[in-house]
Length: 278
Image 1 (tube, rainbow, N blue to C red):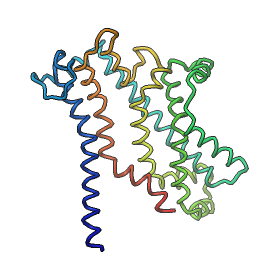
Image 2 (image 1 turned 90 degrees about the vertical axis):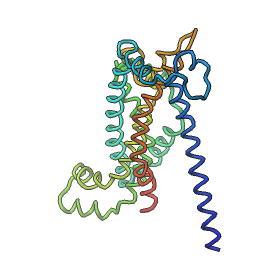
Image 3 (image 1 turned 60 degrees about the vertical axis):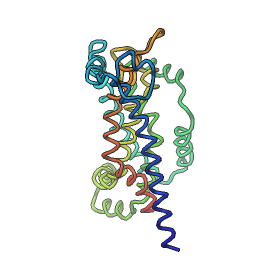
Image 4 (image 1 turned 30 degrees about the vertical axis):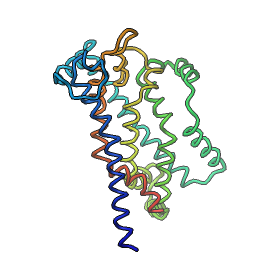
């Protein structure tokens, strides 16, 4: 029986790898070939190798468009991603630690609110009203807070599953040694969250960096553009410059793609560590 199951599992695994590779490589190949075509050939939207390969020229035009708007957008997106993810990691881990370690009558309500934040879609207009009243609308700090608020529910749930797997005896030993709450968390607990922190950093970085909706609503203006909003540079009411559009897509896709490829094992380890240890 085991001898029969092994080839079946091997074939199932191989089929899964092939299907996944096709689903990933075919769209990427289409983007790459379109980005290397000239304007006339790209307008036909055909999946074919370009007659005149001009990827480099298209990339130069993409970076030079609208006074190097893409460079400014990369700076804005980098600041947005780094600041948002850093706040998510710190606040999410602290909240998860408190919810797991301190029993309170408010915990069921807080858990319900966390789940609601994960399920209920955000309301755009009320959020804009709040940001305007605080003077944060059309500002990068305001968008950072929005990204933190929208990503906090997922972070808390992921962190809490891992915190629950850490023995409470570690807390008790640190308290006996004279550690206060902040020292207990940052010197003892926080370093133990390394694997799940890597997961949160990668997943939330990809989400924030590739976010299109929130910058569109809460950070309008060409000077505040993020990388996803630069796609509008090649779309107008009368025509779309497809070769430059796909070249832009190629440029803004590569950083997060490389990040995901390098850290995919850490992502899986962080997502499953809490369940395995529990």
